[in-house]
Length: 319
Image (cartoon, rainbow, N blue to C red; front, side, top):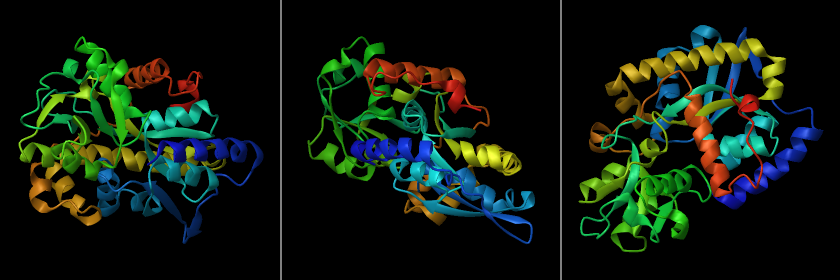
């Protein structure tokens, strides 16, 4: 997901959201069942919705799900507002950026959360085994890969460096897809790589080390991502939004309590091999959004200038 794509998409949506009444198109019904499309990303984070679909948590609430993979927030946010999707999944910082641009969306459920445990989270800043970097403070002035510039990755990495007593202002962040990072790190194209699972396990298996647990450093039990809806659909069909929210909350609770089933369902929508699925660190899936952690992401984003001088209004974004 490219920063320029996000900015362009959100800029376009600012106009669409203000001028169009077609956003948030109601789903079709078949035999009293709502046909609902959800924009997701094929990563570990969204395992609960696939598991909930398999377990019938949505069907018992008269919802027939179609899960469609998007290219990230640049595709999913516009898709939700236009009605291509009824619901979507995105990281919190991307949603905060959209809110500051007055994109008409509203969070309806938690998506995924950090484990809150240093040494046992699903994302971190990694270095090669022989790297001279041993602490987060040593990352100051280094070249670090992130999947998207000016987003949740570089914002939380900077906070890790600050908390370790380093100066993050001179870090050179390089944008690249997560799957490319292990090779880039091994080849010396970057000094460090911020990765999430399964790339975290891949780098550690090759002898790499984690020098910062940036989600943990940013806030206790950080809410990383959420499911959201257009404000139009929320207004037009609150019953559907409630039924979807109830179903996703049941899915989150089930996933949190059944890690073996989570690892199994990953094989149905990702290319993560079985050996890696069995060993990777899973995130947490609480139903409660940690509002204090969202406030922290908003403050960090303002500090880093990713909102263009605007101040996120959490009351307009969070349920």
